[in-house]
Amino acid sequence: MKMEIIGPLILSLIAGLSTVLGCVFIFFKVKKIDEFIVLSLSFSMAIMTLVSLFDLIPSSLNTILNNYGLIFGILISLLTFLLGFLSIDKINKRIKYKNNLNSSSLYRIGLLSMISLMLHNFPEGIAVFMSAYTNISIGIKLCLAIMLHNIPEGIAIAVPMYYGGESRKNTIKMTMLSGLSEPLGALLSYIFLKNIISNLLLSYILIFVSGLMISLSFNDMLKEVIKYKKKIYLFIGILTGLIFFFLLSLL
Image 1: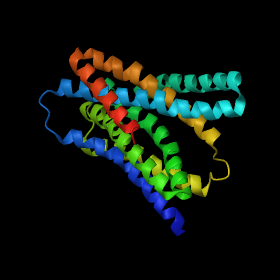
Image 2: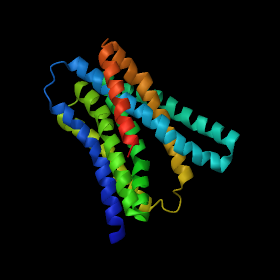
Image 3: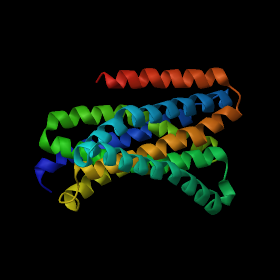
């Protein structure tokens, strides 16, 4: 393997595997389990919504508008977002059908989070690799930023999955699988996709993923949180997510 791609691949691997750090919370003995679940889901919901609204969508929309103009660009972006938004319901129904033995709502949220974040991490891996391949210092900065927001995304997978009935071992495996899609995206982009990957294609993927994550946040996570009737923990989780995202934006 050429030396110039080892560094970018290592950075994408580090960024992806930081998702597993979200699993650390399943090793603590939690006395107030309901409150902890509400806090974790609210925090993750806030992060995924904010990342979608203020990071993925604006940058992707700008690329699409530059290629297609205002009206058609907005229309195709909206359709791509809606496709992602509506896809969660289809995936959810398939999980319920395939997984009757372990179909708790918490478990399904963890599984849906894993699927959404795998799709999210794949283009992120391409972004880290391409940035580092061009300029290693930019790649390192991007890697650090992605690492920090991958940790709460790991929480979004691990906490509901573990408290929904999955074993610790399998929860870590599932979270790691999501994170590994990042270096996989980097590797595939170098081997197979370097001739077809473009900013425009990545923009479509990221808007689609934004639809997935916002749908997951409001149609699944929020509904699950409301069931517990712990409004103060819902507020604290969202506020903590807002602060965390604001600090990330300063990088």
